[in-house]
Image 1 (cartoon, rainbow, N blue to C red):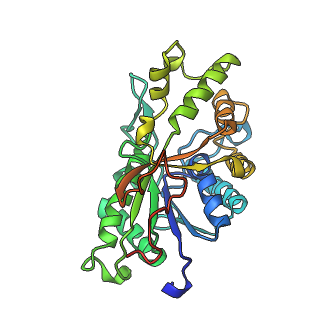
Image 2: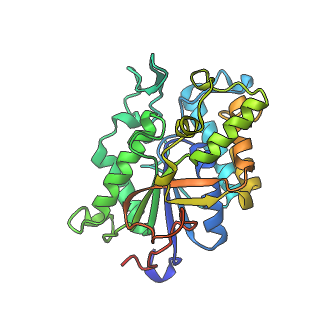
Length: 310
C-alpha cells in the first residue's frame, strides 16, 4: 500500500478466535469504518476447539469446526463492514490451543494440545507474520487483550504477547526489511470490560432471576461487585459508545451460532449490558502515546494522534 492511498486513520485489531471480535470490538470496528478509517482485523486461530452449541453440529471434528467458524466470521464481518480480515500466518497456520478450568475456577492451559497450537507458537515467527501486517497497513492504533488475556485463555494471552512483540519489531529498521519499511504504532490499547456497566447489568440480571456464575452468585457491596467485572474504572482510558451500533453488534455476534446462544443466561446478561445508557467498548492503555488529559475516558481511540504517524 502506498502512503497516499491510505486513509488518515488506521486501526488494527488482533483477536484469538472467530467470535472474539464480535463480542468485544464490533462497535469499535463499525464506528471507524463508518467514519472512513481503515480497519484491519487479524484472527490468530480458526477456533477449532471451541464449544459446539448446536446439537446438529456436535459431530464436527476440530477441522470441520474450524472450517465452519471461518464461514461464521466471514458473515459477521460482512455485517460489520470489515473487508481487510486476515488469519495470522494464513488460515490454519495456528491451531486453537483449547482451555481447561482449574480447580479454583480459572482458565488454564491444557496438558495436551495440537503440535501447531497457538500457545506453542514460536513467538518471533508469529510476531513476524504480524510485523508484515503492521508495516503494510501502518496503523496508528492497535488493539488486543491485556497480559492475562482478559480472563486467562491461553490463546488470548498469546495474542497479547504476539502483538506487543510485533509492535516493537515493526518499528525497528534493522529487523526483517523484507517485510516492509519500519512503522511505529503510536498507541496500543487493551480491550477490557466496561466495569461499571457490567456491574450494573449483573444487578439487573439477578433481579430478573438469571443464573450466571456460581462463584459470583452471592451478595456483594457496590465496590466489590464492580471490581468483579473488570479493572478499576479509573484505569479505563477510552470508551467507544455502543448504542449507535447495537443492531450491527448483535447481528454480527449471533452469526457465531456454534459459540453463541442468545437464550443462554450469560448472553441475556450481555444484552442487558449493551442496552444500558453509557455502555460501550472499553480500553486500557497498553503502550505508546497517552490520551490528552480530560474529564473521564476519551471517546475517540485516535484522540491526540497525528495521521502520518510521526
